[in-house]
Image (cartoon, rainbow over all chains, first blue to last red; front, top):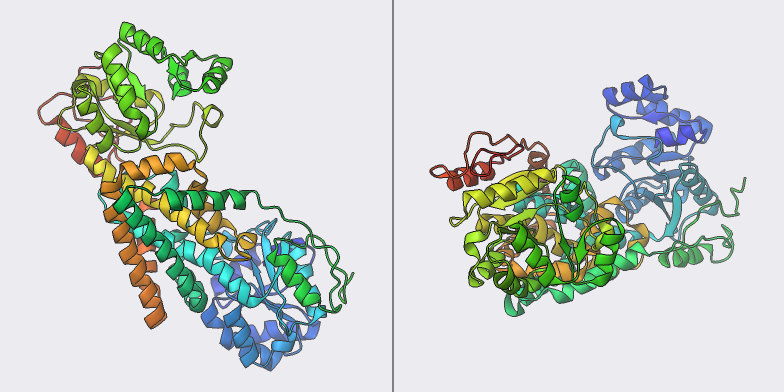
Length: 301
Length: 301
C-alpha cells in the first residue's frame, strides 16, 4: 500500500508496530515509524487520509487512538470484511469520516518483503457505498484506489461480505480441507500436480490471517458453508447411488465459463453526491461494472 | 504425448477418431490416422509400445481391437484411474502385456492445440508395480516417461487411486462446488481474485473428462469425499459454536507447508526383475522417492 501510494506520487507516512517492518521500509527509502502517536499527529496536521491495514482483532484499539489524536481525518481501510469494521468504526464514533475499502489483491505471504508497488494493478478494489458515506471522502478513497492502479467496485458492506464469503473465505477453508485430507493419504503428496497445487495454494497463507478474516465474517460464512456442504453432499450421494457426478460438474463448469467471460463495463455517468448516487453505484457494481477513471464529484481534480 | 515422444526421437504413429484432431497433428508434421486398424497393424508390425490415451468409457472397445490386431504389443496408458483400467485390461485378456501409467500433468483444456512437447517435463509419472507386471515391459514404460522429461513414481494401482482421489478428484469436485456456490451470490464474480481464480481453475476442465475420471474412481472417491465432508462439518460447527476455525486452518496450513518442503530423493539401487523388485519400488514411491534416470534391468540400454 505504502509502495503503491508513493509510486503514485503521494506523500505518505507508514506506521507498523514491528520495528523490523519499519526498519525494512526505511531501508527501502520509505517514511515509517513504530510510534503510533507520532504517525497520527502527522496525519491530523496534514488532514491525511488514514488507511487501516491491520488484522480485524487490532482494529478497535487503533480506532480509539485515531479518535483521540486524529478524529477529523478521512478514514478508510483495506480489511477483508466490511460489516465488522463498519460496526467498530460506528462504536468508536468515527462513522462520519469513514468509507470502507477492500482491494482484492494479495499473496499467500505477509510482511514487508512480500509486497510490491504493482500489487493492486488491475485488481478490483471495493469502496463501500453504505448509506452514511460522504461524497467528498468517497472521492478521496476512489482516487487512492485508482492511483494504485486498481479498478473501483462500489458495493454495500453487507453485499461485499456475502460475496467474499463465497469467493475468498470459502476457498480458503476448502484449501485447508484439501491439504488436510491429502496429508492423511500415503503417496498423495508424491503425486500432487497442478489441481492440488492450485487448489491448496492459499492454505499457505498465515493461519492468523485466515482465522481473522473467516471468523470476522462468520455471519456470512456459515450460510455459505452450509450451501457448499449441501452441494457436496448431493454430489456424494449421486456418485454413491447413481455413479454420476454429472449435475455438479455441469453446473460448476458453466459457472466457471461464465466467470471467464465476465465483461466489466465502465461506470461513467454517476456524479458523486448527486441524488441517489450511492444506490446507483451499488446497482452498477452489482451488475459487474467498475470505475476505471475518476467520477465527477466534490473531489474532482 | 505424441509431441513429447517425437521430440525425444521416437518413431510414432498417432490415432484419433477425430478427423480434425488428426488433420491438426499432420499439419504440424506428425504421423496420425483416424484408421484404428491401420494404426494397430503398424504397431503389431513394429512391436511398438501402445499408449492408451482415451477417456475411461472408450477403453473397453479399444482393448477389444488391440486384442484382435496387436495382442503381442506391450501396452500402457495415461488414464487418471488405474484400478478400473487394470480390470478392463484383465477382462480383455491383455494383462501379461500391460503396465499402467499416469503422468500427473495436463491443463484445463483438451484437444490437439492444448498440448506441447514440454508438458511432462518434471511431472511425476506413475508407473504401476502391481503383482503381474513384467520387468521388460515396465522398463519400456519407464524409458518412455523419462524420454518425455518426467520423473517416474512407482506405485500399486490401488494406492495410486486412493492418492489421486485426494489430490485430483476431490480438488476437481471442490472447484466445481466453489464455482457453483459463488455463481448464486450477486457481486461474487465481480470481486473474485486470486483465491477464487486458482481454486476454481480446474472447473474449466471439460465436464466429460471430469466425470470420466471421478466416476471411474468412485470406490476411492466416496470415502475421500466423506472424510472431507467430516472435516468441513467440524469446521462449520466450530465456527458456529465457538467462532473459531483455528483447528482446520492450523492443520491445513501445516499440511501445505509440509507439501511445499517435500524432498524427492532418487531411486538408484533397485534392479528391475530382481527378487522383490516390485515391492521395493512400491515402498520407495510411497516414501516419496522417484526415478530420474533409468534403472538397470531387462530393458537396459
